[in-house]
Amino acid sequence: MDQTGKSAFYKFLYRHWPLTFVVMTVAFLVFGWLSLHLVEYASANLSLIHEHGLQALQDGALQQFLELALKAMCTVFFYLIFKATESILVQRLFTASKETT
Image 1 (cartoon, rainbow, N blue to C red):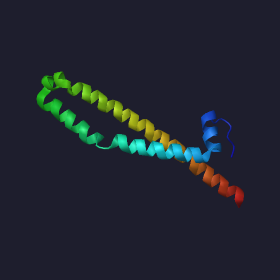
Image 2 (spheres, helix red, strand yellow):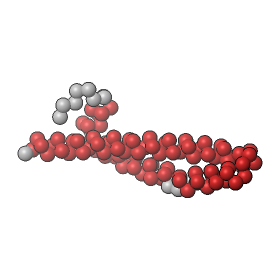
Image 3 (cartoon, one colour):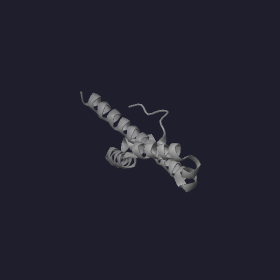
Image 4 (tube, rainbow, N blue to C red):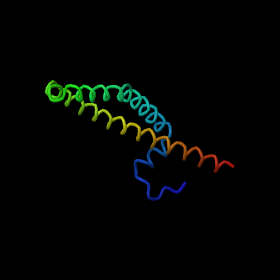
């Protein structure tokens, strides 16, 4: 496969596919763990802020909402790592099968 224009990190993961598989698995597990109940907690937090307004914000609802937003960003990061490594492994799989036929 022509890898011109690819980053050094991409080339490294493409060459070391067992490590790529491990990274993909870890990213999937972390993504699943972080996303567990995320929507439910965010919805409950926003409902609390809506019902109790400023008092809820003073009691820590804003901080909790910001923490949930950060958790959501981390979740998206690990999802992107999962998708990137999945793409590398799929490309390697189909490139390898073309070379053997």
